[in-house]
Length: 320
Image (cartoon, rainbow, N blue to C red; front, side):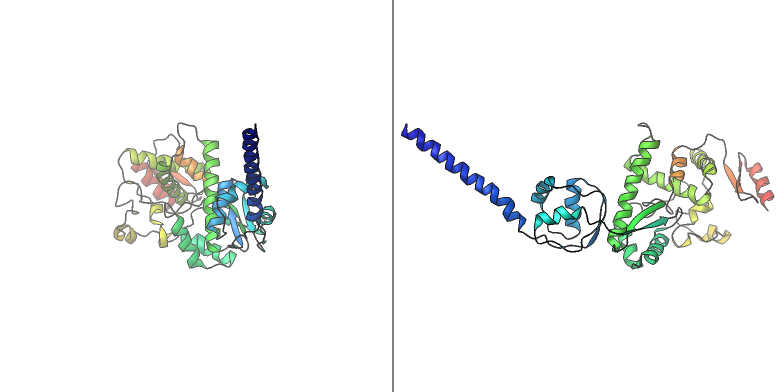
């Protein structure tokens, strides 16, 4: 009997100690201050892991324990945040985080812009360093151009260069997912390996026309010429990099030996030539069913399409 009582007593003492330890852990944890990071940052998701990763990336001293503790607080939603003062108590930091949303401004990114043009305009609008913005774009880019889609974005007024580019890339990824969900069946779903080719096609279409209806016809010409093994012979592919908005001359056609010169080389250029709209991406996915092999801009500012070179020559003479 005494042995049973002693055993129960030891178990009770052990449970009491365990309870005290469990009680002390959050108390001690609460008084470990959060190391202050960048005051303004972008949270791409309200997922707990994303919250912790974002805080870490921006210099805040958080860990896996914080991920557990965060479950007891209202998770901050996707968006921009500005932490004015880092509270000394850890619980207070996480409790206040979701209420510290940053002041934002709306910026528009245009289809056809190169990364240099895009970052230069953003640097001017947001009063940031253009060189740093461009460096950050090139650090995060997968395809050199075309990673960020045209449209409106919201940017925190006090965001630095890294935060701005990170937010634009993250938002573009979300826009692409929404686009694919709305416009692609499982059969023609956009896969990572196909995305680069798709962006190259869309960027060529975008350079050739801004007319939504014509985009599908231009896309059909690209598809038809590629299937026949013909060179694309499109001026738009030569509007890359520093040549983005420079008129293509006969001399350029002869002297530009890069693979962006589709008068000289067969196939597609090596990378996208600028940013794209989702209209041009959809046209690249679903070209019109035509026999067109040529097109020429007429005096009305739209394009005349032709199935044969003789018909194309007539359109050229009409345009003159």
